[in-house]
Length: 41
Image (cartoon, rainbow, N blue to C red; front, side, top):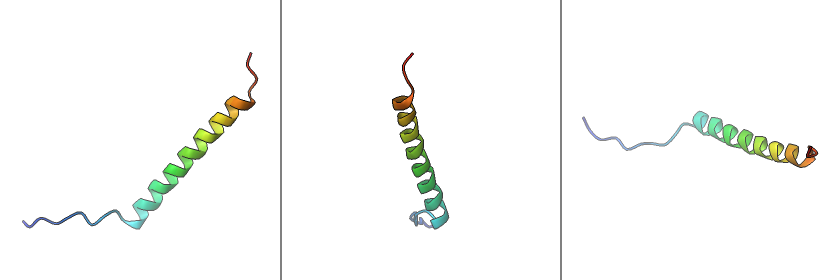
């Protein structure tokens, strides 16, 4: 068997990872905004 170097990820995988990254960043921003808006008790 010959060694085959990794050819990179498919465009579909790249898009999924990018969506996960963006959604995670939005979630973090919303959580920070909620903490800013919510009055301390």
